[in-house]
Amino acid sequence: MPSVLRDRTYRHLFTAQVVALVGTGLATVALSLLAYSIAGRDASAVLGTALAIKMVAYVTIAPIAGALAGRIPRRALMVAMDLTRAGVALTLPFVDRVWQVYLLVFLLQAASAAFTPTFQATIPDVLPAERDYTQALSLSRLAYDLESLFSPALAALLLSVVPYDWLFAGTTVGFVASAALVVSAVLPTPRPVERTGGIHRRAAFGSRLFWATPRLRALLALDLAVAAAGAIVFVDTVNVVRDHFHRPAGAVSLALGAYGAGSMLAALLLPRLLARVSDRSVMLPAAFALPCVLAAVTAITATPAGTGSWLALLAAWALVGAGSSAVLTPGGRVVRRSAADPDLPAAFAAQFSLSHGCWLLTYPLAGRLAAAAGLPATAAVLGAVALAAATAAASLWPTRDPDALSHLHTDLPPDHPHLADARPTPTGAWQHGHRFVIDQHHPSWPRPRPAALG
Image 1: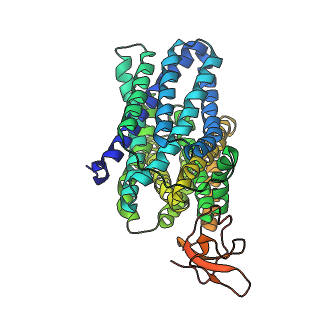
Image 2: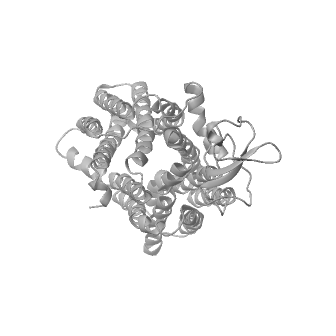
């Protein structure tokens, strides 16, 4: 058993995440069948719109939730969102109109957009040690990958004995169980922080934090690289398998399973690797590997189908999964070191919102390109997007990126408590060095100085 699971609070939170993910997976299958029962041959259009609604909810709701997380006890917020999701899931079997599906999907995903960043911001408080937190991030990545493999299998098993609408009951049970586990966990009290401005200003702070912090701007570019590579997997796999390789429907699951296997393998290896090298040294090479894999996919889909090219596609999907995991898993560490502890909910909410904004761009791009220009052109264009994003990340993320920076203060009075260890400069400013993050006393990133500490 991983050592972090010996911590009772984290064990309860992780179990809550797992059961909620299983419930979400069951809802995904059930929602597809519900859309088909309502819309028939137009079910794909309904699901496509529902997916867009999901991303819009993530992009718009998460920053507001991050602002509220600093004002509402985190446990109460997470439990409320779990119960909201349970209530929505319980209602879904009774809808008979497409607009009702859209409304309930928005409510369901809005609750998820509030729950997930709050959950992510709580884990660093529960596991303050860097090694433990890294292991928790890897376990979280494994949970997502296992859910993508386990939930469809569980749904298939349940559908052999019950109608599809009973899957929503399983979803409800998952969210209620998640709420109960969160209630049973004793969460640490976040550090107090001096708050300025209202909800709107706090909601905007997370985005401003990303734009003002070089490594977070790089993280956003890395998220775009992952979204470009992942979009062809999630959107176009069915067309690649059925139309190019002319394989049966079961082969779609095999291809997606290859992606999940690659992601899980990377997540298992990352804790030991990150104990020896920096996040930047892992994430940037992984991001640059993604356009290389998409270049191979361009060649695979441009040549006649065969056994060799089929195996090559499975290998490519596994490499996309591994590269994506190597970028996404350390991302939480990057966010954690770039924000003050009380600002972590806003920081994770911004990361959640902005990263899903990347998917909102690449999902329709992958779908429309495949329909209009074919699979090779789609892989080539998405590969170019991934390459541009990885190159931007390498440029934005300084090679030397210490936590502590020497910087000047020109707008604080000499007797301000923050200047207790500062020294005056000939220009009248005050200079000192410490772990640097964007906050009310440090609204912008300092220019590189030879005297940088750490």
